[in-house]
Length: 331
Figure 1 (cartoon, rainbow, N blue to C red):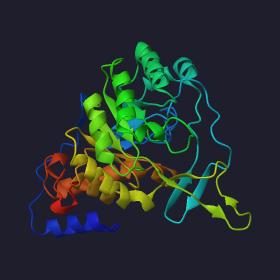
Figure 2: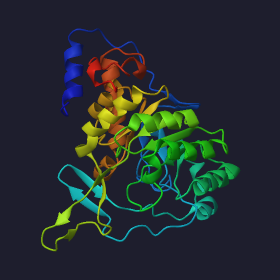
Figure 3: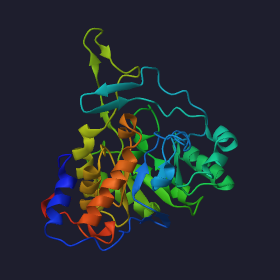
C-alpha cells in the first residue's frame, strides 16, 4: 500500500456509503489485558516507560513497553550504536539498562502516574535470570503486564538464542508463568526459519499473546575503513525495510496459534497498521518511526479511526484477519 491508500479508501467509500454509524470501538484485549486502542509504543522508544512524558500524550496510545530490563545493570555495546540505512535504522544497543533493582527503586513508581497501560520488558542470559527479574517485579507490582524479550539479536548470549529454540523459549515462558498471573506477552525473533513452531511452544507454555517480531540481523560496512559501521559489528535492522518481512511472519504466526498477535516491524503509518490488521494482528507497536516523529503513534491511531469511520465499521475487529488470499497460510 502507498501512503495515500487510507485516504483513497476513505474517498471511494464516501461515494457509496452513508454517514458513519457513530464512534468505532478501538479497544482490544491481549489475554486479560484490555487496551483502549491497539497502538503501542515499542520497547526502548519510551525508555523506562515515562521518558516521553511531556513529549507524547501517552493517554492517546493503548500501551507503552519499557526498555528491556536485566537482573544486573548493563553498559551495552560499544559505540556507535545507531546507523541510518536507506529504508530503516540499524542498532546495536546491547540491552543497556540500569538493572532490575535500580529500576524498582528509582523508576517503577513513575509508571503508576502514566495514563496508559504499561508493560515491562524482561530480558536475561539464563532461565534463572529471566525468572528472577520477573519475580522481583511481581513482588512490587505497579504495572500491567510483562513482555518477555527472547528476540534481541545484539547480545552474544541470551536474548535471541532462547528465541530460536522452541524448547528453550518454552522453558523461559513456563518459568515466568509460574511466578505471575499478570498478562504475559512473548516477543519473538523473526530470525528463524520456522517461527510458527516457536510461537506454538510459547503459547503451550503459557503465553497470553505474542509480539512479532524484532529486528532482523544485519551488517553495514564502511568502505573507507573496511570496518563495520556499528561498534559491535552486526546489528539489528528496523524500519520500513522490514515491514513486508514482518507482515509475512505475522501471518504465519496468526495462522498457527489462537492467541492475540501484536505486530512490530516497520509500522510508520495507519496504512501499515491496517495491513497487519488484515493479516490478523490484534495490536501494533510503533518503534523506530518514533525517532522520525514522536507524533507517529497518534497519527497511526487517527488514520485507523478515520478508516473505520468512513467505512462505517463499528469495531476494529471487523477488519482483523480478513486477508482474502489463503495461499500464504503456513504449511
